Length: 607
Image (cartoon, rainbow, N blue to C red):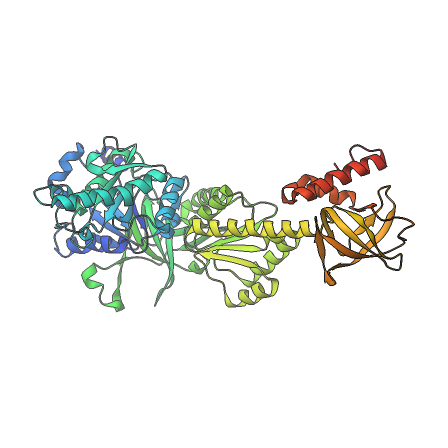
């Protein structure tokens, strides 16, 4: 009998972990508050329990809220409920990690049906795709559709011509398609209203809701619970006999407790007095748990003097606050194990493997990136790599003076590596002085794809600027002819009038005769008596030539003079910058190369 019970325990399913993502003003928090408060306020048995960073919605509450809608699922719900992460946003999602990807089993993407996709919405979809996390869309704020009659009922019961005016239904369909379905299609997902979806494995289900009236919340809970049960059953198998596995959601200072961590336990059982084993970027921390804490029920949390109650054990999936020594060293996203003393070494080994797998591969050269959590860092690194960006160093935390000095050294080898890309982090005051001193480029944002976009745009502009500067340093070809009756001075310096036939003649350029004899360099160019820096093809100007040239002896009226372009400059122009040359400059280059090939008897000259 004992064995059977143990087996039954091991076979139990845990709550699916549900993460809520979406744009900042699209109603994530309001939606979660509506789900929590309307049910908690009833003070019924099996009410929603708020954990650290999460709210647990028991299955009996889901069944009661959903009512007859559950019959549509054709499956008896075996899950004990849902654990909804209520620190909404992609930061929480990327912090919730375990070996093999995201900790969230399923996600709710909240989109304002009236406003549609925003940058953070696109960001959320990209992260869901990266972690291969199944998701549904909560199309929020349907109560704001003109003429819509919104009530605290399932959406599917309210979606008909008996309740809604035909114009309101038309407006709903337009907004649903334009603001939700179409953007998802453009991002590579098939999507439709959940009641029309034939195959939920191929089409994203959209559930219209109102976080204000409560309409659609039964449909949303039903779909999330049903999908989790149907497709994630193996993943939800819970080992309540084993030790606790989890991940850190937040690190917080609590009065009287010091530094604490808010963690999500996704497997096993955590007990007070056991040892906390935490994976750090540079090793493993082992510390003994002083207290496992849970918030008191919502109606008791108004008294800030006594927010938490100690508990002896926590069974997955759940959120818990942990108090223990030395937690100031840990960061959000770190993996944890909670084990008895005899299991510490086993847990350390497991954690070290997980930390090693989570390490971001770095290049021999590149930029420095920083993020607020390990998961965010991983997501940022992945997106930068897709854009072909090299990463020399990747760390969690704010930007420090040491970071800037390090990047200044990267910049010496390549100006394009003189940059720091930071996701959801701050620049510390002492670091700012160094940034100004070394002229380091810093990119900060809380939207990963915008960071990548801004950085790659800067790279393009910098490459273009550097290319332009390199191009400008090169001596360009030009061919000029001495005009008749325009030799004004024979030497020291020689002054004559010339017509620029091809290319651009510039002050400082060396000149040579058609047989290769070096004549000197252009000291001055005058156009109608005014000093100019250059003269382009078609211009007639007077020039002063400094050097050994003697006009009428070395060159005379009607003779051609060529700009003597060094061979390495010719190669650069021919191989890298032909697209930047005007047609007459290209002609000057090709004629000059042809001339030099004859003079040197080398048909490959300059090529």
